[in-house]
Amino acid sequence: MNVLSIQSHVAFGHVGNASAVFPMQRLGVEVWPIHTVQFSNHTGYGAWKGRVFDAPMIEEIVDGIAERGVLPICDGVLSGYMGSSDIGNGILSAVRRVKEANPAALYCCDPVIGDVGRGVFVRPGIPEFMRDHAVPAADIVTPNQFELDFLSGRSSATLAEAKASVAAVQAMGPRVVMVTSLHTEETPADALDLLAADGEGVWRVRTPRLSLGVSGAGDAIAALFFVHFLRSRSAAKALAAAAASVYGLLKRTQEAGSREILTVAAQDEFVTPSHSFPVEAV
Ligand SMILES: Nc1ncnc2c1ncn2[C@@H]1O[C@H](COP(=O)(O)OP(=O)(O)O)[C@@H](O)[C@H]1O
Ligand SMILES: Cc1ncc(COP(=O)(O)O)c(C=O)c1O
Ligand SMILES: [Mg+2]
Image 1 (cartoon, rainbow, N blue to C red):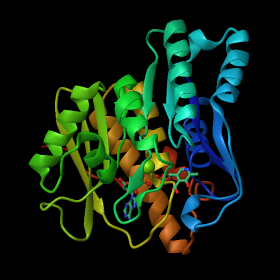
Image 2 (image 1 turned 45 degrees about the horizontal axis):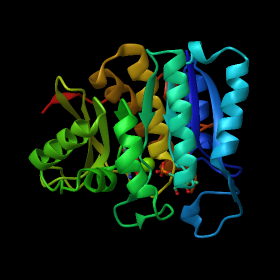
Image 3 (image 1 turned 90 degrees about the horizontal axis):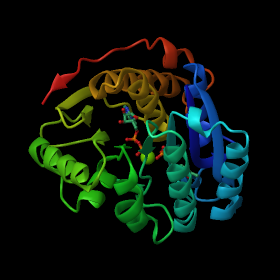
Image 4 (image 1 turned 45 degrees about the vertical axis):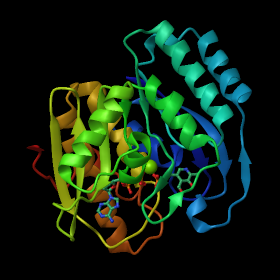
């Protein structure tokens, strides 16, 4: 399986491609990473160095890949942190080229915009670009609760509201939606929910809430969900597998007291997760 992964890259630590590429490789996927930015570290530190690339650079690399004649064997495109809405256009043009070459390829868009508590952490214009252009072009989207609320223009304070928000996002285009870190009135204080919907049903996985604040978990879970969905074509199975792996990864990270997720040290969690959680139809 071959996945074109277009997102941010950091030299130190694990967000964007530095969080997503290795778990996919560990699952046996050939990943073709293209970086939208290269920063020293993730922006959660408040300071970083590096630069944002541009749409022509993304298109140039896709051109070079196309010249190798391999776009027809690309099974999917994964996008995440975009850097600028211009880069977003470059990503959507890559998606169009891949789908022209392989109509069965799927586009999974992780609509990285912000987070509850931290607010919007991307450049102006990106939230609207995600809502008006990227999400409508996607087959699969993986918002956190903050991003779900922004995209749907609704609130998700209860499970019923969250399901209505998911349906509103599906009405924008994507058939499959996975919501991460969902906390509704029904969610116990020491837990968090994940929802996945695929047009046939909505499923929930509930895991304990760990006391750590790290970046990059969303990038890892989007990559894992996408790979498991491409393989199983089941949103429920992909949700169970991705949630178990990321929980194991974060539990190890918490135990080690690390500020960065233990993508390398806890790599066995991607293949043989040490925890598993039931999937409930809701
Ligand atoms: N504090 C936490 N405790 C347990 N699991 C967590 C925690 N933070 C993140 N996760 C897991 O990682 C997933 C993705 O993280 P999330 O923070 O929602 O993504 P993002 O970084 O995109 O906002 C969550 O759905 C959850 O499964
Ligand atoms: C460069 C970069 N990419 C991606 C992300 C997204 O990380 P997360 O997976 O926590 O949403 C961040 C968050 O700070 C970031 O700074
Ligand atoms: Mg995210």
